[in-house]
Length: 192
Image (cartoon, rainbow, N blue to C red; front, side):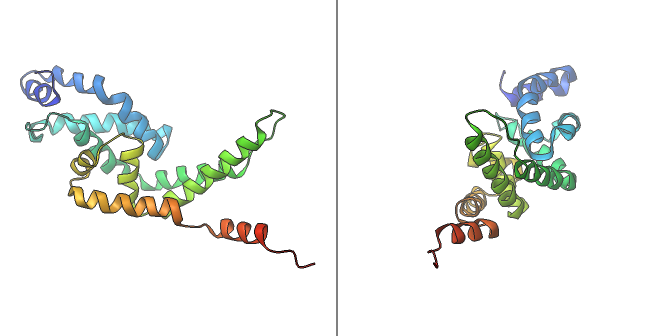
């Protein structure tokens, strides 16, 4: 009875047993929340997630062995309540990438290029719908399968596939206005 459903079932009789889930998943959940909503909010959302999960443990489907999708779903819903903080984090990430720090290291060009890419990625993430962004970030930062994402967000797997396709399309193809302008001026024929 070491699987998650066994731990939850045991915690109904022995509440302290629920701590096993915290020890198993708190670190990965915290990382996911920190990436989504910022480090200052991560502790609160992680704690609140486990508190809500503990209070609702009797409603967990014991037919599921893995509690991660359930826990990450709770965390994602809490993040939605903190949407303003998430938007601020993405904007500050964009601003931080816009102001490269110059030094004398031999990798300055690589650092500047990486900062530009972070800025572009932050803009693209902000342009996605919250549903598309949730799926993408659970996949990328939570290391979830499509099935786990579907369980977390309580949506069909087909919806996850559609959202992931849209998110990937935005990441691959959506030009940013300054990118288009930069590319046009960079490759424009000389008019001399």
